[in-house]
Length: 558
Image (tube, rainbow, N blue to C red; front, side, top):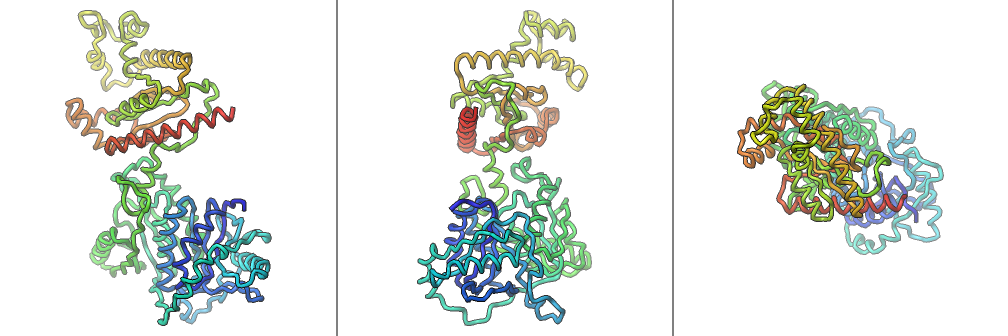
């Protein structure tokens, strides 16, 4: 069967049997849906009775909260590529049902629009008689159309034939004798976080918060100052994009909820001043933060919030350098070496050799990466070395530098004293620009000559190792820009140890260069030497292998 971009999975099994079904159901669904999978829960829904069932409210119970956690955890393990979204429009707190206020008995007075239009509907409904297949799929199609905006001819797929082996296990499960425990809910609920690249742990937090909140859901999203200590902070999505994705997700899962998203510039934000808040959702590792919020609230004369703790989701795919839990920092580290943005138009360049422009701040490990790429087969073009060549006696740059800066920059043997020249331009942007206007074009000429020579020798890849690649505007000479980054504090340590300079001098050097963030904005690929050399080696090998595939695809497309 063909793949669909977006699908809805209607789960009909009783809550107590669903935990057994989650993994096989998601595995089957992932064979048909490749991008977004909405999950609609209706335990006990009978699609084979002969009469058309209608959507009803299901109670918000503790088991539902546990199931949602398990669903996102299983999805992360077996179909991490899918954007899973558990829909809650038809879930209602029992307190709301018993409040005496008039609430419509149908959760969908009109079909709910979803941000991604469904192309297929799937279900785990157990087909008792194969002859019922057509009737059940039609019934499922009409049921889904009553709930969500979708095509009247939406294809329907019964997953149950693939789940038959579970029946024996399920038959051994007894229905719980005790009545399902209702979930305690609250008027206004608050959470905080970075919410970078929404993943299963975020979605668990958001879904359970939506289960708990009856009126308003307040979300503090880390911005600026709160991002400074984050691992690979340069790869964190912009605040506006993170907020946009949060809004879209929440509008899908519980459109009736009033949602307010605010920037978080300190660990507390509005959580310590909003008198209407009743509950804060935390995890094991953020519980202390929740307790700190309550301490501040009490100091401010406000009641403490209920701390509702959810479990952390384990990351079955984490490496030695990554956290055991599902986390955004692990996802960011997995982006290293991959193509973050497609290359710009380079039709003015010969297809081969394919030229990588490698840059990065002082101490970032750029040159060690360049040497590793050289060992893998690339021609390394060392622009620092070429920079020394353009100052040599007899070159055009040599004559022009003396004309511009005077003969007092010469050593006794008439060579240019780079330190004396440096003193003349240090702290003077105008004089520095005069120097770079002379030197940079000459270095670029040498780079082009080396690339031409590599082409004649039939080389496939060249790496232009250049600290000033972006500042000098040399990107028109390369097919891709690769940037090496490390945190500023690590760069300072490396520079002071390597060059024997003071911390202040190291900082001044870094601040005179483009920031990591600015360089990453121009990067197609980002690398980092923050961890052990073996981690860097694997990163570079991944980047190299992916590059080879891109070059091959490019050649096949021509």
